[in-house]
Image (cartoon, rainbow, N blue to C red; front, side):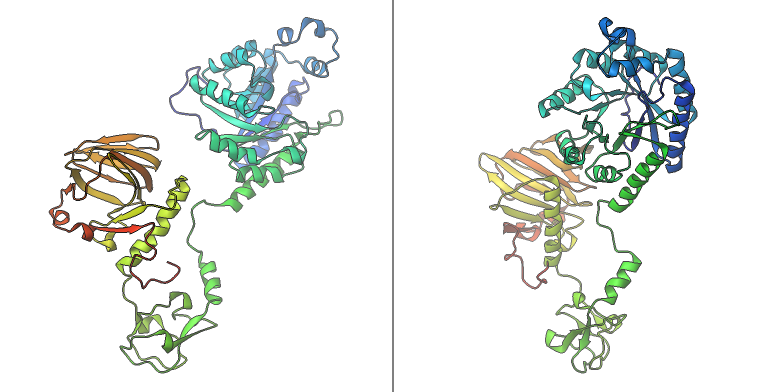
Amino acid sequence: MTSRRDEKPFDFNDLFILDLANNHQGDIEHGKRVIREHGAMVARHAVRGVIKFQFRDLDTFIHPSHLAESDNKHVPRFLGTRLDRDGFQALLDEVRAQGMLVACTPFDEVSVGVIEDMGFDIIKVASCSAKDWPLLERIAASARPVIASTGGLLQADMDALVSFLSHRGVDFGLMHCVSVYPTPDWMCHLNNIATMIERFGGLTVGWSTHEDPDDTMPVGLALAKGARMFERHVGVPTDSITLNAYSSNPDQVDAWIGAWKKARTLLGLEERQPPSEDETVAIAGLSRGVFAKHDLEIGHAVSRDDVYFAFPYAAGGLTSGQWRDDVVTTHAIKADATLALDSISMPERSDVHVLKQAVHEVKGLLNKARVELGSEFEVEYSHHYGPGAFRETGVVIVNCINREYCKKVLIQLAGQGHPSHYHKRKEETFHVLWGELHSEIDGRHRMLQPGETLLVLPGVWHRFWTDTGCVFEEISTTHYNNDSVYRDPAINSMERSERKTVVDHWGRFQLADGAPAAE
């Protein structure tokens, strides 16, 4: 690992950090055994394993009066498991041989220099060092990726740590951690993980755990709350070595990673997926079908009075959920027979249906973006080539304020574009709140991320579109109707009412009737 801070950020996701700490027992061969046996578990599960060391320059780290004799319980442990530089190098070489990354927690400035000299991949900040500003200054200067634990920190302390590392350009992630060994269930507070992710958007957050090694439930819950790094103390017991209550043996690490993998499978994808074939068959098997009350002739416009719904559904027929009042028979249908899909015709959905369906998607996008509109607003559905083409060309405009200044919230669904145009009087600035917005101004392309702005002067040709879906503000001078000039003459020839549907709120009772209640 070079000492230069690379431009490409380090990928902290799905790291399994196995803390060797002092569980090498000061014995190089035993330390290698710990690395090999836990490395086998990492290889078995094909995850990104990290073996973590702890460095203390003991002769300067420990106060002189405690070197010979100390009533501090940690000092004898540190001194009794001392390894020299060559010993740690042998262990580091073993980690590399096992194909894993290597991290180290320094507890003093001298140790940071050793970490740099030995070429460690990651520096880990212990919870007890998260407010040790002299040490943090030295760590920040190392130009290595940093993972910082946050055990015992108040929110203000955590904010200060994040600010400190961010201002120094450190590539870092955070660990939710409880520095109680072992950690009882009631102290885990795994909800803190989601809180940290929300507060420090963009940072990878993990779970540094000290709970009972036999308890595999927390790792799955931590994953569900958003944790993407996971850390445990590890060791190997022998006839003469007993692990402490929070260190995992290889079998426990095997079960721990296995529980994470199962949780990941159970969580699945965030986006709603189409049903599998098995699910489709199962749902159909429990659905009601649509059946004729009496004989129906060819060309009959079927009404609700002509049919009844009954179980079981007949394969190839219309289900009760597909029923519409505009069905027309294309073949004669006998009484009590199903309305087979190949014996009926169903007209295309109306333009109103397209807009009503889009409302659901727009509301979902606003909820995802956490943009609140209140209850009093006007909505414009801009459909430059008609409502039927709205999903391809258009935008939803929420009019908020229009005085000497104007504010609108614009929502575009994934794949929607807005045609090229300019404004005769209005100057506007786009401010992206969520998603990605592509724009083209005077032929120059620019892609905007959340937080970015774009100025559009009067008379300047511009168009915009999104692949992801986008919510953005338009802040402008006063809006005037018919102020837009489009590059496409066909749009310019349209009346404003032809290319816009304007309603109060979402237009629940202003859009034309005829769509099912669920719409």
